[in-house]
Length: 165
Length: 295
Image (tube, rainbow over all chains, first blue to last red; front, side, top):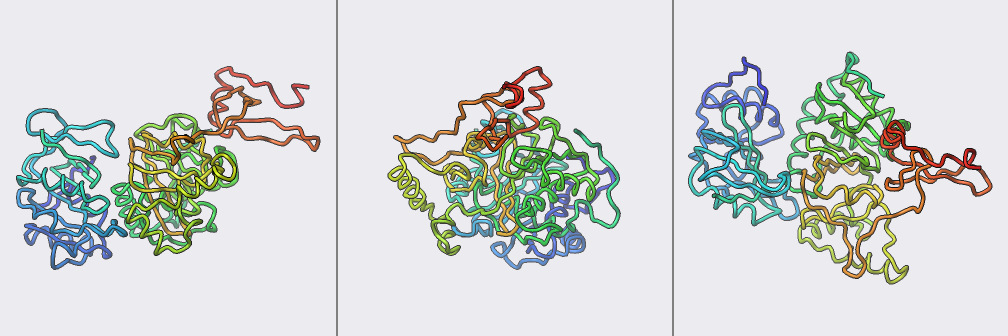
C-alpha cells in the first residue's frame, strides 16, 4: 500500500490501520476501540466522526490496537442468517505480516485466493487460528478481519479457511 | 479507441458521488465480497439518468474507481452503443479518467448483460448492471420470504421451476439470467447475461461486483470462486450454440447476435463482443461477409 511519507497517525495507530479507518468510518458506523488509549480514540473521533459503541457486540467496526490483546471473536456481532452483513469488521494491528512459507504460518484458502496462500502473522493472541476456524464454520454469519502491520494489510473475510502449519 | 485521462469537469466531486456516499457503498461492497452471492442493501442515490440505465453499476464504479484506472463500458458486448458511450463519457467528465474499448487495457469494466470473451485477470474488476437482483423474485414475490429462503439455503423452489421446464418443454427454458450457486451456498442472479457467459464466472480471475440501483442491492463474487449453474444429473447445464460463424471475423466460438438484413427473411450473425471481433479482424481473420458480399 502506498501511503504518503507525511501520513503519521498518533500512537498506537500505525499508517495501515489508520488509513483503513479513514477510508471506511464515518458518522454512520459505530466504533469500538480496544487498548487504543486516548490518542487513537481522539484521532478517530475527530477525523471520522464515528460514534463510539459501549460494548464490542454493538460495534460495526472495532479497532484493536494490539493483536495480542484481541478479545474473543464471539464477543463481536456475527450478524444473523438473514442479515449476515450486519456483522462486525475488525481492524486488528499485529506486529508483523509477511507472505511466506515456513513453520507456524497460516495456510489460507477460499474465495479470493487462487489455490492457497501462506501468511506469517506475528503478534496475534494464541488460539486465534481455532477461533477463526469456528468463525469459518458459522457461515453465513461471522466477523471479518483486516489485519494491519505498519503499512501492510491482509484481509481475512469469514470465508477464508485458516490452517496453522 | 482509447482516450487518455483529461481534466475533470469543475463543479463535480471526483466520480460524481460525494465522499460519504462512496464510503457507504464501499462498506457494502466489502461485506458483499465477504459473503459471496449475498445481496447487501445500500442507500442507492438518485443519479443523473433514470433507473434501468445502469444506476447501480455506475454507483459501484464511482465508488471503486481511482485516478490511475482505465474504464471500459460495454452494453450487450458492444462499446459503441448509447448506454456504453454515455456512461464512459460520464466518468471521463466527472472523474477525468482514461477510457478504452480494449478489454486487456481496462482495469475496471462496467457491463450490461455480457462478459467479454477474453479471460479477465485478477488485476481487473468487472461491474455488472443489475435490474432484478433477487433470483427467487418471480417465484416468491415477498422480500421477507426470499430473505428467509436465503438464510436457510432453501432453494427447492428454483429446482422445481427448472424441473417443470423439463417436464413441459423437454429442456430448461431459461436462456439468460440463468441462476447460479456461489461457493456452494448462495443462489444468485448473474444479471441478464446469456447463459453462454455463465461458465466464465466460475473461478474468474477478476473481482465481480453487481449493482442494482432501483432495488438498492450490491452483491459480489470474489476472484477464484466456485460458480455453478443449477442443473440436474440427467439434464446437465449446456450453453447455446449457433451452427454459424461471425460474418465479419469468422469466429464460431464467441456469442453471436443475429442481425436482420432485409424483409425477405435474410439475416447474418456477428460477434456480440465488438472488441473481440475487431481484434480478430486485425489479426487477419475474415468471415463469410454479409448477404451482399456472399450473393
